[in-house]
Image (cartoon, rainbow, N blue to C red):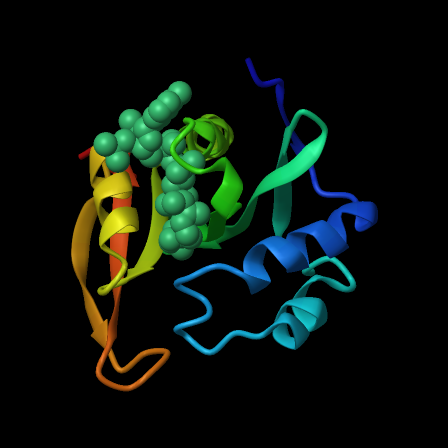
Length: 157
Ligand SMILES: CC(C)(COP(=O)(O)OP(=O)(O)OC[C@H]1O[C@@H](n2cnc3c(N)ncnc32)[C@H](O)[C@@H]1OP(=O)(O)O)[C@@H](O)C(=O)NCCC(=O)NCCS
């Protein structure tokens, strides 16, 4: 039985978040190093909403949301520590974000690398539709796929 708490990220979480992301794909394949993550998280990313999932008090998940992207918000990053995967943590963190987002807007967008099959399946299962590929976006010969989950049209006709 695990105790899961999701809350806003504190500066004290930064080292654990950098460690979590530094040892994880797809970001290793995409060329992100611990130095990159340290630059991104110290200080906390500006203009973003950052959350952590604590499992029995340990940082096991992280999410970053950028508000106002197209007619919605953009989930800039979602990551669960290798040791915490396949336990429902990613699903609960995503659900937590969606509840916040769909109170204020109609769409949540996210990008996923074309080679990241587990994440593509994860988002598909959670109701995300693949909109299309952006080839050679982060690294050569690979695409980032834009995904969208929607609560309906932004305007009534
Ligand atoms: C994609 C990612 C966020 C998913 O997180 P996760 O915590 O493993 O996701 P969940 O546990 O909620 O769901 C994954 C699977 O575990 C299953 N699961 C959920 N609760 C479970 C439980 N209590 N016990 C066992 N399995 C469980 C789910 O049914 C799901 O199974 P499926 O693959 O057969 O559909 C995680 O793998 C990750 O961080 N990957 C690397 C980074 C990444 O790719 N991020 C997304 C793109 S930016």
